[in-house]
Image 1 (spheres, rainbow, N blue to C red):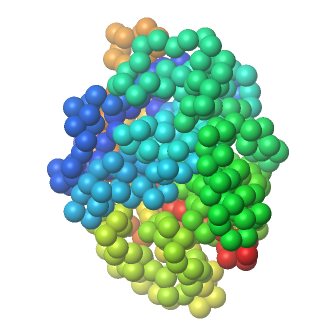
Image 2: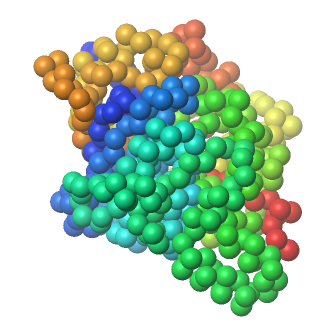
Length: 442
């Protein structure tokens, strides 16, 4: 599309198609500078997943969401070394040796990466999605086919799928879980070895009863593009409050697109606040700081630590926007202080996306059709056989970021009536939630 900005549908694939995901450094600069494990550099590590069937089309699990691949890359960076990311990557402290839960996982790419012994290195990962038979069967199949640590397993046993997508005691399991319902059944899936170790550690800690209660919950929860539906926000927030360990270091990692509007993010942040969760700095991963997310002194410019994703991305200067924001009232500035902790970054096109994809995506100009792209992304005109197959390689970010604002009025070019979804889809956000201090065990 000569002379026009490229289009980025926020999801890829169709029900039954396959996505081969290759972990990658996030940006071209990191790809050139980072020390990447040989198995990743030589594409010996990959994950092949099948896009679930459209058995429940209204929840849109029948796509591979781009946010899932970005979150997977963030988790994979745990194993990369770079001048600023260090040896622990950007999310290493939140994943390595932790218990991890993914909610609304779809194909479960982030969960797969989190559990991988050379990438995320989590102690235990549970991938969950809406508790519907066909959807969960597809999820368990994806987990089972990637259970081996080799690059591309080719066999999947019926027994492994029936057992939850992995062998008993595995560091990675899959299960159905509907937001807002009791999480007792998924707590029971925690491997005994992991739970026993956590309980032993709890007994050595002060106030061991409270610590023991936290031991059955998850240290880290992953959310990839789960905020698009306003009606599900209350149930999702409730589930977070019931499954996240009430410890200082517990975190929710959120990667959220803007395809249904930036207000969806602020709406969920307010729902999360009602259950005691607040947005916190991305670099505040170890629970060592107690600064409130609403502190007026907090700003993105303060995130200059040795493992800061902010410093990896070039900030786009927007003087006109900054001028408008400077004229806000004090009350508005304080109410929006949390937005300083939301990193908004620009997406890069992948090799399998070309100008023909832009034309096909532009044909679906509005609503959910526009959000989901088209078959042109997957195969040529003469390749009509299923399953269709995408090979997804990075870097998946351009290396640029811009200031996040929570209201469309600050970016009027993104208004729906102006075709703004095409502009919004080029951008995505990452941020973290933690417990407010008053909600932590004393």
